[in-house]
Image (tube, rainbow, N blue to C red; front, side, top):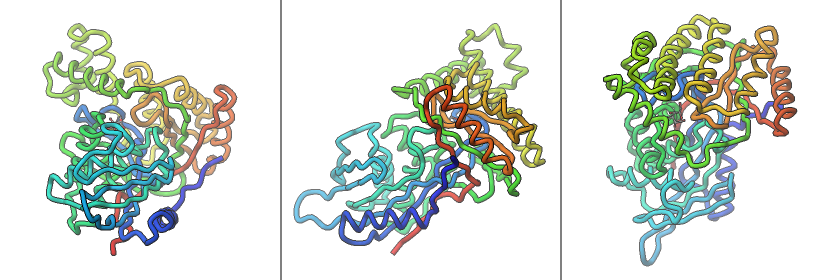
Length: 399
Ligand code: GLA
């Protein structure tokens, strides 16, 4: 029922074997970057607010070597995905055929931006391996960007400042993938720490580590295996609404408004903008409160904040969907007596995963009840795994 996480050495070995099979020699560099799950603080990062994510034991691994020298013309980047089976090549001084938003754009964007900053790798052959579910709200794209930036570090021997590295990857997502994301995903993949949640102030980029120690509670991730956002335009639309709300309120960003101040300005905002702003402002408060309840080991209080976050995302921010609501309802039915502290959707929404805080000694029974209830109502088998907070990106091999 609960999937096992493959270890980094195991994934590296598999990526190496694939590289040898395709290119007839071992890879010279292997880098790894984790996905992330956000415990609370959703759609707050691009409002200068707080988020509370952790890196997960699901990774993107890149195995690479310089492409053999060509006798004429520019060298090429070649990228082979072990997960989708797709391959793509593009000239080192050009763009991949798929252009903006294509699966190759994350790698292309980071390589290109690094090159513009004087960190040139030259033509490469790269094998991509990943255990971060694609489109599941667990930052598979950020992990790919960060693994690519780490590959550039391995090749050039230059270490990027971690915050600048995350910002460069975010810029790749904006300009090459066409998604106006915040900083949470790339930051988590760079800065993840074993057994620590990251309370990130997205205004100052200051991070405070919040320990998630002990084995009595577990983070259970349930993938609904549905994805409803077809164009991704919903994300940009929400972001625009937040900016419009901040402008109406006369503040730099929604971070500069409290729940009480917002309630007093009801008349100044049209209803939809009011609801979006209410989510963001209340979610920022819930996030700092959750960091406190976690520090105290108050799991029921943390769980209540997670349920409240979900309701706010569903009703005010309108980014949930039936399937996510169903998993959270099933969690509520399991309740404290069944070992469930709290649950919510995680990531941008419209499908993907929920994150639940559960008693470790009840994990198996909880997973079984969630899966059976979900399958029964939707006909879809969910996938589930557990993760401890994981280490951020690193170079696994550098010859
Ligand atoms: C996506 C974005 C993040 C963040 C979340 C919502 O994952 O990449 O920057 O905005 O959605 O919290």
